[in-house]
Length: 309
Image (tube, rainbow, N blue to C red; front, side, top):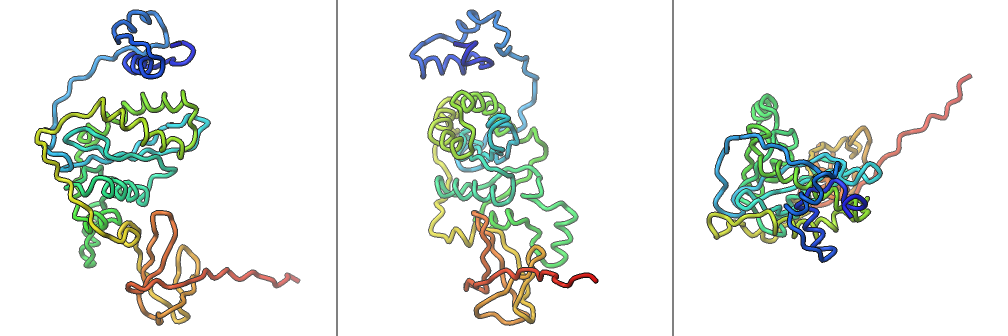
């Protein structure tokens, strides 16, 4: 069975699946002994000694570590996938994770939207210093000199939600989420391959319905203090909150320029007035003047018809 189906699985993972899928109970040490000479069996590597950089937060919902993993999750023949996860610091529980095609602001906002709807608002997020989350120092200073708040689109939404964003000092500082990804890259990739899952939709279904409940049961710990500090989200307009926002000025012909295109506005707007472009999580673009959504259409570029003599 190991050679034909479970090649390369570690002994703990292999033993769990033998019990769950085949009703065979064999201890990890017995499997190691039986498969001692099997060349494809992973060997335990000596762990490097490292200092503990800080204690866990004592209560669930106090701090989440959030990161993305670019990996061949669905194999070379599967769909391209990026896994974005949020790990509770107090318990090591994966509170939300999802596969996406790309890694960007909207994908990160989608993860935050789903986890706050499911669990509530955490007190803070621990993030790397990627430009999605934080402006570079010189850009932040320049923004403040212009009178802006110096926040990225992601940072603006977190401020509106009241979630503190903390930049990590180094990749090692996000140890819990990094270790979680190493475990998932070992276990989840093998399970998806074994089950023939090659699409993001199927992978997300398996992730939420099967893998994460089992993962959290096996690898999470009890918090030091039992009282969780999630804050209920309350009633919000999700489209207005979890979106990208950009400002444009209506021209004399009531058009605006977007990505090199002219867009014609319709509705209660005059030339010289500001309008706001909101890109929703599904990628659709909506234009607002205040709280009023404006209709618009894209102006197709003129096609040259003159013939050269």
